[in-house]
Image: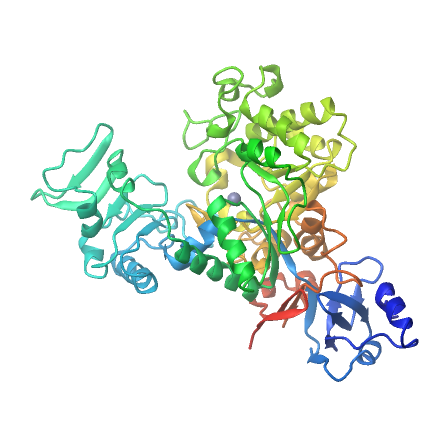
Length: 598
Ligand SMILES: [Zn+2]
């Protein structure tokens, strides 16, 4: 049965009673997965302006066509709500797409070629930075880590500036190995930094020379700062180019909303692109929590903005990340017995210096006097904008759960509709899962991390702690609202793509991209494809207080739609590996077709 937008029908009735106005766009003969429990499947959708005005059978929707209606014959293609990526670093993704990605590079020819490619894309004079070479040198992509190290060399690949000088005469370069232990500057960068063969390395730094005393371009430790200090900020025009590149990747993946981690410079770029009509995805804004004094002073509250750019949360961090063994655990890393991870600077000053690091599994962070993070969250409560806080290790998660529990309790907010988030919730202590439900928290998780991180997860934290890693089923059963994000562009140790098929595949299979291990990594934590799609559409919309606007293909919602050549639900059930081959045919945002594939 067709479900017409009552308001439209009613207003039309005033003038020409009987038929609603013709739709601007209709999609016919599809397999429409609505994520709306009231009507899970349909054949066709009608759009008027930026809204969905009818969802029903092809025959029903065909009747809504008029003279100016654009018709898309889907021929059985699959339609879902546009994907809503709950965790994107647009800034970093753009820098990587336009700049240089060396994550999977650990040999000379490819190194030269990739840097040359970046030089061709970037205007003369602009810097080529980061790169993160060597992330797949010890554990190759697709490895589950079970067979131990694969493809590792005894000596890690270390480039020389001679590899890139020839292809970067007009671009200064400062790229690094993924773990940031080693940096490479080209001759142009060394020159701008005033580093010569006679320069002495500052204390705690190293300027590498070969046997003949010639600079190799390799810099370590504090010597890197000699170059860093001469790198100018990213020019505004280049920032626009970077954001455009991210919008393109989003369009191509069927992503219609990105929940960003937003700097001031980025917000300026988004506003400029919005003004120019170039936004093809909606961007949910999340400045860092240490800005709360400024936003509170301005009276900015939750939902400030519009459908394209909207203030939805504050981002903060408890601990580091797994990729660099900075995530904070009660017990040391298995591969690094003196390391239990680290605390992010936004936590400082802590109530008692070193409280986080000294805390044991029998303790709670709130046993110590309040530190900076607690004060900042308190301040956020007054603004009505929810905290979205990163926690990865079991201790990191304990700390944020302790803080949330204390503050929500003190404000009588535990059972209120607060929708506070734990970002990543990556490895939780067995005692702590139930609190995700009891405190009504949103777990903003990154399913594709499973496919990539299992390369080294058990080697780093052992099988026992790994049981609590990416424990999506346990989190969901505990009552957390799961929402999915790509975490694009990845960490310094891995590339994560905006295309949602990677996350869907990982959540459903818990396998690497090459299908390892056959039974899935901790297969009890697998989700169904329906649960996974919901966590990538309806869930993130709800978590941003936008459930009335998007997240389902329903009458009255924004016409944000993704059309795939593959029935994601069907292959997710029967042959999940085919999710990875699914191609986007159309991406529609606010009723406008922003991408049409071939
Ligand atoms: Zn992230």
